[in-house]
Image 1 (tube, rainbow, N blue to C red):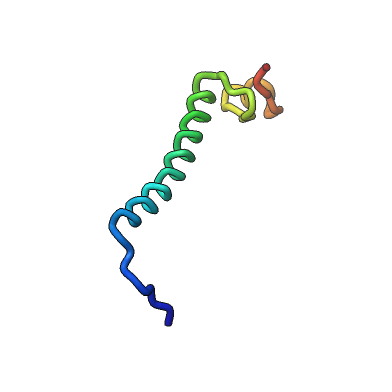
Image 2: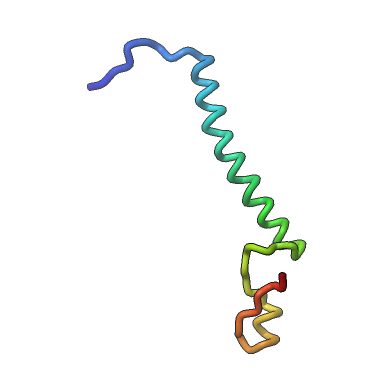
Length: 66
C-alpha cells in the first residue's frame, strides 16, 4: 500500500486548496456572465427559444438578431 513519506505542510495544503477553488470560481463567473447577457438580451453567441417566440411563430426557431 502506498503511503506518503512525510506529512504535507499546512501551507502546501492551503495552496492546493486555493488553486482547486479558483477553478470553480472561474467557471461560476463565466456561467453568471452568460446568464446576465441572456437576461438583458445582449447575448450574441447563445441561441435559445423563448415561450413568447414559440407561440408567435408556431414553433419555428427565432434566433436573436445580431
